[in-house]
Amino acid sequence: MKRIMLTGNQVFRGELILVNADHAYRGNTRRKRVDMGGTALAEVAADALCAAMEKLGGWEKIAAVSGWRSFKEQQEIWDESMRENGEAFTKKYVAVPGHSEHQTGLAIDLGLRKEEIDFIRPDFPYEGICQTFRENAAKYGFVERYPAGKENVTGIGHEPWHFRYVGAVHASLMQKEALVMEEYVPYLKRFIHGETPRKMELDGREVLVSFQKAEAFGPTEIEVDERAEVSVSGNNVDGFVVVQYIRCGMTRDRAISKLNVV
Image (spheres, rainbow, N blue to C red):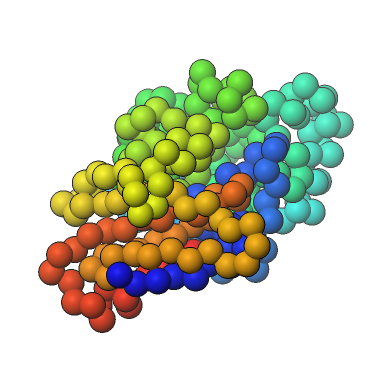
């Protein structure tokens, strides 16, 4: 087994952080981002989105409308919407500054390419190339973040255009269990690290998903399989989600080199 030490600040970092009205974004504001022609995404999300679009030929008909936003930009969007659309509309479709997924760099609003695109509510229908992307999104680590029927859970109105990068493992599980992030983060807590991991198969590999509660004082230590590729993400609430990709044929040195704490 290999031991990993995680600091308290890492609870607020990673691809699975829950950002909503109850949980402000407290992650890395200097995270590396990639320009996507007028908007930007965290590098890992940008690479996955470009791979999906290349496979589907999506960029011919789909535009990246809005990705990463600074706190200042989110505040300006909030203020402008309050003036033009009123409080009810704004609270339904615009996140409070400091509580927006767009500030993570892991969220993207997509829309059909048109001469005029609504910045707040771009057209992304459940048909054609948009639906094709939606049906394949989980393979590339994306989920439709605010689906219909979950408004009371997310606190945000139905947004068919808003996608969030969480990684292929989590996107697949969320899709399988029909969970949004507000449900998925507590769902994972039943799979205690080192005791009862959630087992699944992805791309022919065994995957173990588990939760480790953060220590109240000092760093948190976890043990992982030396044969595995390992990814750890904070949940922005109270702990860490550990993903282990088991490869029985991997050497010890190769396994360690694949460790990824995000």
